[in-house]
Image (cartoon, rainbow over all chains, first blue to last red; front, side):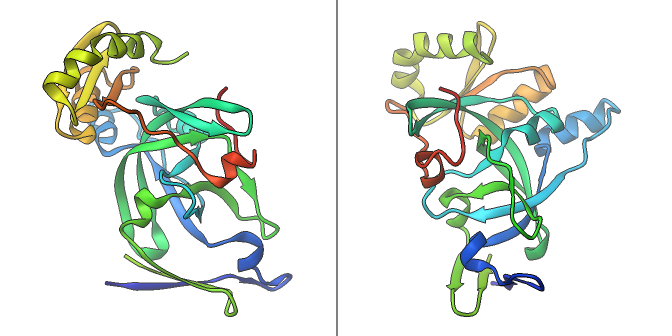
Length: 155
Length: 82
């Protein structure tokens, strides 16, 4: 099982793990089936969109900023009831291809990603576009090293 | 609302789908039920072959629907459609 360390530190702010939470570089792309369809039709395949994923052990499903799917031209395939501060809501569900370049995980197929409005930037200008839920974390071992401002992930 | 027609058809067909295809994934386009697939991936691939980038529904056939909850949603840090 390969082991990858993500040291959360910046020149201006020092240790940043407490402030940002565990962040991992991520790329969201069009699902494999759609990619193949576009290639067969000779249509342009949108480039994957890069950002950061925040590890969210409190969520059972992974969520991605919905604007990403609009940019990629990926349509929702379902909707899911959501619990919000204002009562029950609905969110769209999308298929996606997920790459973690820092862990050499390439084009992992995810059929049910929740679309939400969640894009924000850390003080280090890292754009968070994904909340990595337990549906993804079930494949990983994670060590959260608070004193060392370091997260270790094994896949 | 996207998939409104497809979701309405799914609800209409649900009792019958539960009898015959519980645990599988329904593929619906407009007012047509195409079939039940073993995985969401297979259902999606079939949908893309038929309709490309058009909208279609891939929904798990289950008696109870999962509810998406997380701390960020509960605290209002991220948003869902109400």
